[in-house]
Amino acid sequence: MSLESVTTEFVGPDANVRFEDWNGSTWGPTGAPVLVRFNSDDAVKHLVRHPGELGVGRAYVSGAMDIEGDIWSLLDLDRDLGGIRLSPGRVRDLVAIVGFDGLRHPPPVPAEEVKLGSRFRAHSRKRDRQAISHHYDVSNEFYRLVLGPSWTYSCAVFESATDSLEQAQDNKLELVCRKLGLQSGQRMLDVGCGWGSLAIHAARHYGVQVVGITISENQAWLARERVAEAGLSNQVEIRLQDYRDVDDGPYDAISSIGMFEHVGLANLSRYFNSLRDQLRPQGRLLNHQIGRKPQPPRGWNRRPETALARNSFVQRYVFPDGELHEIGQVVAAMQETGFEARHMESIREHYALTLRQWVTNLEDNWDEIVAESGEGRARVWRLYMAATAVNFANGHTQVHQILGVKTPLDGELSGRSNMPFRSRWEYDLTKAGGGDQAESQAMVIDLRDPARSNETVDT
Image 1: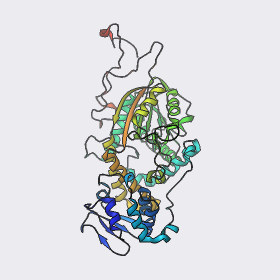
Image 2: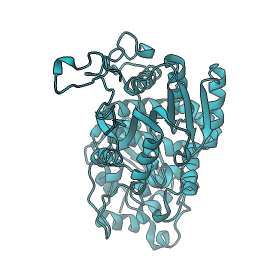
Image 3: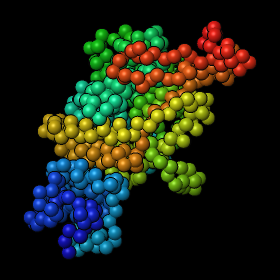
Image 4: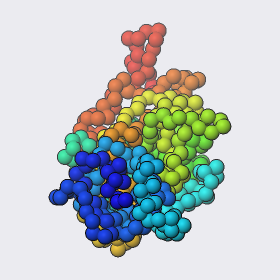
């Protein structure tokens, strides 16, 4: 038996990928743009024990397998990493290669793998801190090298595919501020503020007072340093705080950009209730989150499945306790807790472009990143970001921005959302602060006399 039959099942018979095993045997087209090298039979042992994405991930992260050259040529084969499965026949081929001794004496699991325990205990404050620390407290220098000068770890917004990553991230920050309708003197809460980029943009260009919260210690101290360097310490406060503990509202606007994946299905109502309670009437919430298509319900209560698969590479190495919600679930949860959902936008393709540029940054700074955080960590991120980019490009994974308003339902402001007739958010995002495309007049509808709508009513 040889590895050739196994790799053919993985990538298909016509894939432009070359392979080499630890004995020097090679197969696949000469001159292929990518070489997959099996450095030892430990790679096969990992695959025997987990004949899917987890086995591939362990083999690569441990160094038992290398991917040299253009990783996109390997991954962009119209399949996602989570879809990798070996048939029983191919598993038997692998067992024949390493023998039953390979089953009895498995190679060590890479140190970068994490298991936080039962998912029934997920999303407590303590457990969330552990999950966030695993992902975000790698080192700030690591993130600088991967993310670039924008210090923004969420989907960028490209006005064209030729935009630089920095311009596209600025576009996204500007888009968020416009959707929130920010005005000078308002108070804004930024949930999951990262390294402070959105807080700095909003304060600098819109004159708002911003409170940014994170539960990552590394993020908090660097965000404070960046705020001070920007000369905005009198406008921006960065707190090490859980969203469940914020109690100093009301705020005029709340942003939650890229932290929703850590909330969990069981906490959706609590999450939206907590944010709603901190908003003034007519205040806006922009929720920006990764999601996926509806999954079959599981378990005794037949609830929709949102948690990442227990043996998925991303769950074990990247986002422990991560959950991806279907867009309908999120909108329903928002409205059930008193928000009026006003606008939804999918920016899925933009995340594929964002991730591709992050992979380029990682590969261009490979030696520095390995020296900073270790080769295993660098391998995790290369495989995770490249595979995730393919998932977004192929539509297997999604990302949405949902705008909700705390629309009053009684009193003199009943039914007034303070939203414009038509939004002008998209016009020339390079003009920070709204440019000449500030929002049109807020809508106030008089059904008794439509001609009087928006005449002189104070919103």
